Image (cartoon, helix red, strand yellow):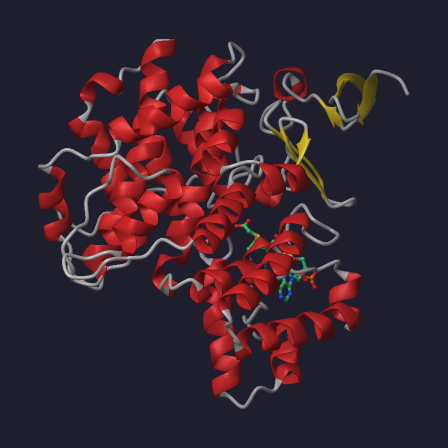
Length: 429
Ligand code: CMC
């Protein structure tokens, strides 16, 4: 194939360079399109627009492939830990023993948040959604750690900011939860590793000892790993866009958390459980809900199905479904919601509407069932997604800041409003 694409506009032909990725994906480079032709491209939802070149994550949605820094997700989920995966994504290689030890140790050192920040939590109404508390608290870190928010941080300052954020987010998430149920905070412990420490802060209380269950720890490790990055999704693109103005990492991640909250993105895990519960409460008629999802005049969608990139089974959903059975068996749980979910998936995968549109279960379909089984309340599901996705947001922010070709993100538009209209005074001045 030629290395240029030809664009014919009227009687002129323009040559546009073709870019090829390491997995042979092709793009037409339109960087100079507007200056040369005065045209822009229009692409609702950026479905065909590459915002950047990136070396972090590769997805082939047609073939159900997901790789972190080249390593298949199945291998990462089976062998790695969340902390090691975070290192892999951010620093572009698996750590050796010494690197991992230093990285993990710095999490222990940075786990506490500034004592004054606790007052912020007190200002929120109990019952407030933990995602709103999380987003504001992460942004507030920039006020408490101003030395880390220079517009042009050095490599060492970025490294420090990365561990501060990864470690403190876990504490903030647990505190947000405690606030939302009106219980006193449990401080991080020096003797516990990342996931166990988080579970302890979440479930222990001054008069209740939480017995850390290795099955639950292992399950959460896998869920966090599976969520750790997913290339240019809505929240990651938000993080990059905000960071492209040289906004600091805390502010950029706070914006990403807000983007993740929506039910079409990371809020879907909460919506799946609510949907399954309402199907049961309504008599369990799956056909009725499948028909509602197919009805163009009904805004209802089957939550946990469909994906912008996967036009085949989401590889993360396959691992999570297997994990769900494993955890339920090991913990001796019999959940009617899991049975209902499996039946729903069976019917959906046979239905012409979903087959035609290539709609399969996504990462959120089974994850909520596991969170519920291990005692995480529904409101916390998107928060769990946020902890998992944090290494990805950070890796992309760092990649963008280190790339000399990065420019401020600033899409254009096609204006469809009024033509020039005169101002009609109503005499208010
Ligand atoms: N239920 C029913 N119909 C659907 C669904 C669904 N869950 N998802 C897509 N469709 C239909 C949609 O109506 C459209 O039909 P038509 O061609 O007749 O207009 C077609 O499939 C294509 O959908 P789209 O909305 O153009 O696809 P998109 O790429 O813009 O949206 C999506 C992707 C994930 C937002 C969408 O599939 C959806 O809303 N799913 C439910 C919410 C969900 O589970 N979100 C989690 C996504 S995975 C984790 C993450 O990224 O956070």
